[in-house]
Length: 177
Image (cartoon, rainbow, N blue to C red; front, side):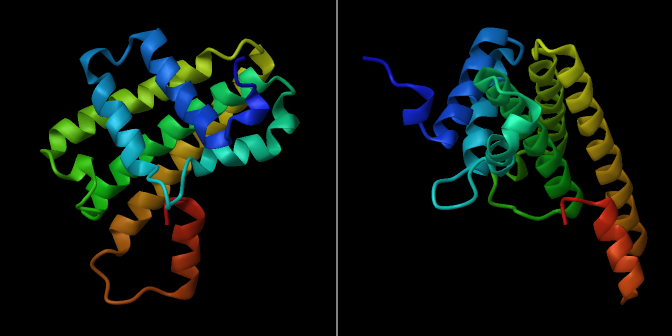
């Protein structure tokens, strides 16, 4: 007897969705194993596990009543968030224990770009075109906002202190903070 979606945890559904997507798309090629390793490093048991995917499951019925679509969007979101976290860690030069910080930055950036493009490929697999356009717009807006916020952070880097208004402006523009 097979497991139903109800008997599998949200985390297992997302992890399985990512594994299936990588295997079925073949787009990651020989880097699939590295992508999976990095996904697992980002989602260690006992820590935050697939927070964006979990959020989508919590509010998923707002976007779709189709469980398969919710998993697909969760896969795309988790890959997108991983790429953003990798870029942020390299830019901020922190989280040195994570695998993408233990290899040359150029190699980590290239792999993060791959993960980012994989997230868009996963998003494009959504059959409902209106939902796809809505989700794609959200992804684009998040990326643009994060880049603006990170740039703002760079501008304040040399200052001894920033004002409360500057802090809130940066935080509003950088969801990674």
